[in-house]
Length: 583
Image 1 (cartoon, rainbow, N blue to C red):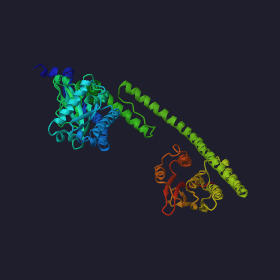
Image 2: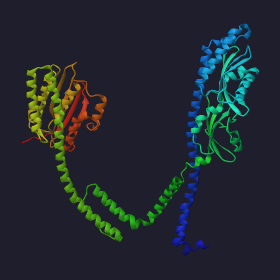
Image 3: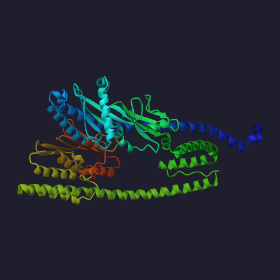
Image 4: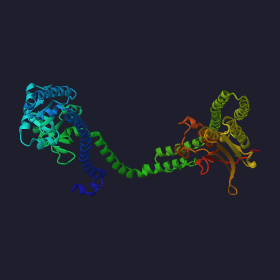
């Protein structure tokens, strides 16, 4: 056979055709399977969607019928004129006559409140008399036909046990279907309502089922109450056969979903044309999947053939780029046997690596300058925050007119602001920071006499250690703001302790700010422990965010900030800083 001829079989043309068939035949088979599967998935999704929609509308229908039920039950329980119809008319003709008039007027007035109902009626078995509301919205002949049907219903045998107990039941007069509900008032007296089935279907017009789609009500025998000729011509089976949906139809295929009423023996069904369903399966989406799968398979084959020419040189470049990404800017690609394009790329890469190394040095110097500027901004950010609080303190003291206390407060505030406005440095002495904190707490003692007290303890060996300004006072201020109450006195402790370290390691100190208040709320504590940026979301936590940001800029990850509630005290803030002694 020609294709077995070795020279011809080894040609690239036969290899490409044979390889293409090997690749494409399984792909075509998968495409066909995927199409059938996608169609079934779309049908199931559409069926579920419209099943929920029909359940929603059926619930609305049941609620409307429930309103009519409530009216009938209330009327049977409250209208005493119904009792007069239980006895023969000749027993008391006048009472019977006036009871009929009042019932007729009541039913006529009430039916105006129920636009869904076509007729209310009362039937007296003792007198074989039917009292109905006047006809409305329909022909007189149709109204009389309904009355005649009601009379026939009550004249048949076993009507009470047959249909009254079934709540709303279906009645057909000529080609029109109705729903009726009859409520027994007493022995021989009944009240009821009639509803045209088409009235229940008015909200269904809002459902878009396509030009050939339908919504119908069916009886318990799966007989349609509307569109009977359409359903018959298309051979549509309205039975669901205990399945979520049913595909039916002889001329065109239809998907049938529905929901049974809880108020009677009828079902709301949606008939969706299959062609409408399949329109929701995008052709481009299916083609995109096929193209993607085919491209992936063909790409593997191409990569195997081009590995030596393209992939290996690219791999050398990628390896070098990863080493550059890891920070090794001294890496270079050795020139070897490669295509002209790759030789140009290798030379360009080596040149760019040299330029990036030089650029990184300049960028690092710019970052240092930016950090210095940001530290200055963060430091100045604290000044208006406390300045407003200070003005508020002066205002509160002026209200009580204690001038000696105002003078003491003013002196303390002068020392406080002198410290803040004179220090434009990123670091201050620990001794100065603690003295500033002591002065701030004295201000709070004056502001809340008998309610705020404090203790400050630190080793003398750390007095010349450098710390960021306002790092302690910020948390003390937050403690005063959130923990001071006029119910119980508050004690604030500030302690500085060394942290044990191994020989040769950098020495650290621990600054503890703790109080005897109620501690951090659980949600706030969780946010603080997670290190969330609370300052930008909630203005009241700007001080905490300020400290977090400054520690990050000044110590580059060497500082630590901890928040927790103590076992014998309230909130605890713990700051770990490297010990840096100023000469």
